[in-house]
Amino acid sequence: MRKWKTVGLWLCAFLLQGCELIEYHPYDTRIEGETGLTAKNVRLIEEKTRGKREFRFAMISDTQRRYDETEEVVDLLNRRGDIDFVLHGGDVADFGETKEFLWSRDFLNKLHMPYVCLLGNHDCLGTGFDVYLKVFGEDNFAFTAGNVRFICLNTNALEYDYSHPVPNFDFMERELRDWPEGVEKTVVAMHVPPGDDEFNNNVELAFEAYVTSFPGLQFCLFGHQHSFQEKDYFGDGVMYYGCTTIGKRGYYVITIKEEGYEIERCSF
Image 1: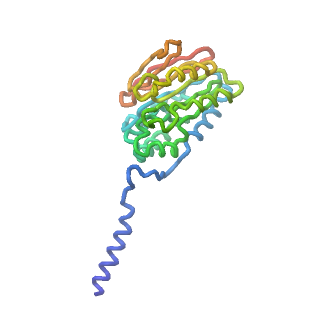
Image 2: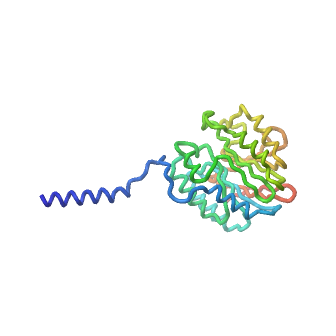
Image 3: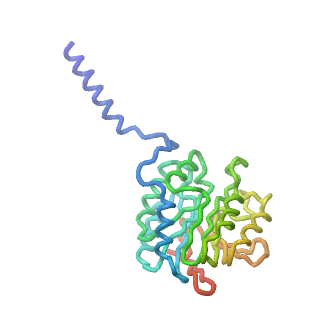
């Protein structure tokens, strides 16, 4: 009897210890580590660029499942020493799994400069949208760098079946109404560009009207299409620049100047 009691106690102890080995469901939305990164990094960007009329930022995009390349480009940007902040064009995840967001967060947190991440369509899969909201923040957000307002939009309309306002014109209207004093220019960034199947092209003309209403609009940025692109989508003179995927080992370096801007395609 004593033998079986000993075996039973040993088995219970083993099972209790084994609980630490059980992996959560891939779409479990419990988050370990840092959260609310967008708000934190927006504060850092605004502090770092306050009063500047010229600054430089990098854009990377679609890093999904490309952790080696992500680590490589993070190291490369750190070594440059001339980048004020990094804009990620969306799709940090491929399947919307929680661990994808956490792995990406941990790689991007190694940047020596602040960064923000747009919401990509792959980030919306499974419970990805909920995880994105926790790890990063709201899907529509804005910040001021120097004298430029960056309007960052969720344009992944196909992922919501009209249950969520995409694009969110109320957000854009509030930005126009509450425009910060002293801000002279605008850059609009999104994951999915107009004309793409993921975009709500029923409202593309309304989208154009809002975008071109922003003061001193410089250009628009997008990811999603996995290639470098330069397009005047609406024939209104506003350029849309598409950033390639990190898997193709490319990124942008963009310099906002006193007059105009420079955009450089970079490879590594």
